Length: 438
Image (tube, rainbow, N blue to C red; front, side, top):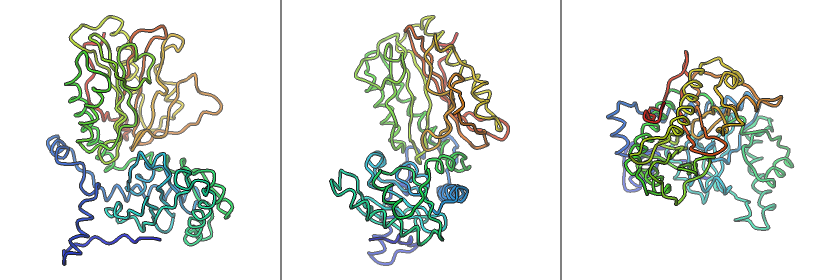
């Protein structure tokens, strides 16, 4: 069963057309991030992104990569990939672990959303979507011991579409798929390729409007961070503090937070403790990583570390904070187009790993979430290490975590940076802690 997307009516004739117009105007993406965010962006002089241009650019990027990889189309289950290619969403976190919604984008042909529970109205905002069909799920949650039988029906529909529009090409790119689905697609003669590679490379270079959307998302995130800081006082629990940030971010159009990385005192070394019920004590360092999928679906990934209360920082706290700050600043200075990924690693400031704990990467890409590439430390380079080249309009995060292996304070810092024609532009602007610098 399929549903054609109705065209937007430019005039209102009778109650039926009024209802159609209401469906469009009530769509989350049509409504936008909201009055609070719009006012703050206007006051800050931040240009509004053209969402029509963004959608067209992103779909064009996907199709260019499909041509490059000689694929008839791409089947997407990852909600971030679906969002990038179609700007259509439905319960993104739930569908990230329930394969109940997918999209098939033909290189030359339709853009089809297979929608959970046939909710075609969720895509009415976007004329690039050709068709909405009822999603057929064969995950065990809904199919039980009939998963294999349902997978056969599901695969037959996908294969028929590829046959109709693929012009004889049976190569289909797939990002995520359960084993039953893979088996059935292959049994119908489809050659499957790695859709993650296609999508990561498509998402690598941003358009001007995407960068405008990212600037707004970053501004809203940093405003939310500042409002969270009003509650940063001795005795507040880590999770209550984090909830203040999340509330303010959602109120400015944010969609979700990928992690709960906020930790204080002894929980901040080693890093990667998520926030807890523990009260933050006066004189402790508290670090956090926003990991925010914010306004327009664009990620703001910045980290800061603060000192709780009115106490003066210890020499040990200042030493660790300064080391992390210096690492960020020095490694940021290396950024310029034409530099290879391996050169980034080999030119980076690092601290002895037998003495200090460090973050998982030196740099990583960012767009609608953390993206390719992830740039490793020098001691991780080997014959299996990939390489690439920095290009203008790539966006990277510059990372640092420093904590001594024998204990003591830990500091997490991170900046988000745009690669330009001549170097880089710092996109994040939230201040560092001058009182914590040596």
